[in-house]
Image 1 (tube, one colour):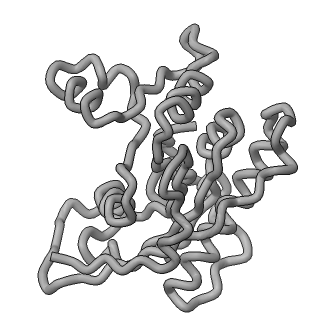
Image 2 (cartoon, rainbow, N blue to C red):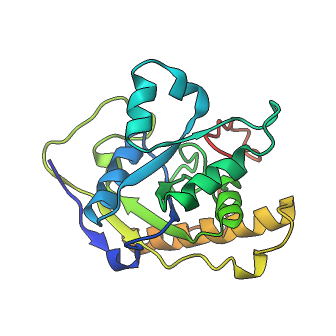
Length: 221
């Protein structure tokens, strides 16, 4: 149905826990990135709201497939991110987290301003965060579209980057300044990878939904 060439796939760790942080511009992205990760020899895992695990049948499937439940903070569960991070380490999982939290609002599909969830978990768990970018997915399912098109056959490219250097942020309080700096580095790395795939120069600044009066609906922060 589609071709999935990977550039620098050797940079994806073959063992041990890590976070894969890709760009996000189509609802089918999780399927596409899961396909890439599987091709590179790692089982993709995602974070899911803990309440979903209590749904009959669906919850059983999520537990069987090794997905990680995350309780929402602010409801008497301030240690929710810590518990999720511990599962990541104990089970040596490869987790896909979209730093943007939702589909990019950037008109040209460049990565927009990121949220802090991926960096927070990486620093909490002490695991590397690997940036990645893919391009071509919009040919299968365009942003905001519900229509899927596999024919004619599409080619979707993926490029894996080097781990984002957060070493100088380790051991520091996870305050807004620390998380913002780490997130900035991650989003810059993702944008640079996407620029390589598109053979274009990414914007110097990330699209900011708040400044452009766009509603944000984050999946994990």
